[in-house]
Image 1 (cartoon, rainbow, N blue to C red):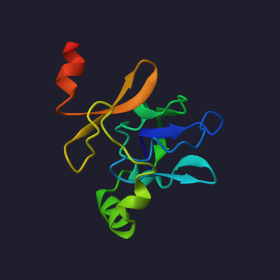
Image 2 (cartoon, one colour; image 1 turned 45 degrees about the vertical axis):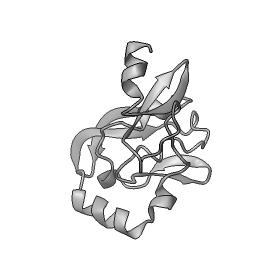
Image 3 (tube, helix red, strand yellow; image 1 turned 60 degrees about the horizontal axis):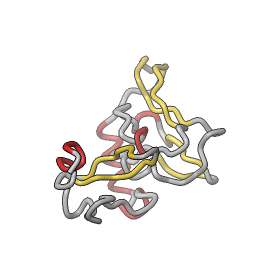
Image 4 (cartoon, helix red, strand yellow; image 1 turned 90 degrees about the horizontal axis):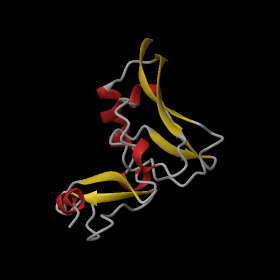
Length: 129
């Protein structure tokens, strides 16, 4: 165990929408019993890409004792679990509809809503076009 930053999910705030599942490239978050859960500490890298898409604010980063991040365990987990089971729900650019097979997507907050934007649409969003 090491002291490190890791995602924390507040069960009281989590509504089980699943929006946090797909931004987790390591597959560390799954829906279980109607709530998002970090399934194993060693799978969570603590990057926090999931935070920006949570509509209820249930996710945060905390520093605590946890198993060290293990890239090998992540690779094994991803190989054993099909991508369709890890996505939680389909994600697309809110502007053009592209998905992550077309181009890279980023989680954003816009107008109080959590959504996604692709690399092609991001410059227009930044510059207000």
